[in-house]
Length: 118
Image (cartoon, rainbow, N blue to C red; front, side):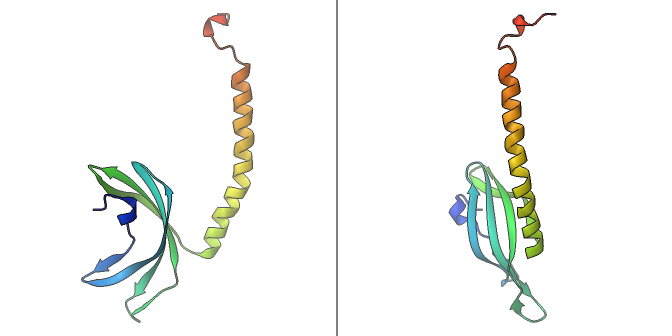
């Protein structure tokens, strides 16, 4: 079990054979709940060569001093990655507007509920 984010890897061995190898790792969030992205390749057992790289986004939870995988999402293709990025680009401006609207609405409300008529 990994105790630090630096120790976390996406490599995986099956019966002593490396079947998934990590190419790169990026730490997105740190703390007791950590999110990491891995660029990795899986072994094609039939040919003995590694397939095209893939991306995984993995959430870890620190429990009793060690990080444990809680959930993951594998980006299956470049097309899917670009679709996800496109949705982010569309939604984040909407989120900013919604946050500003909510903030303005809450600042218009009286601070003390006693000021309201029953």
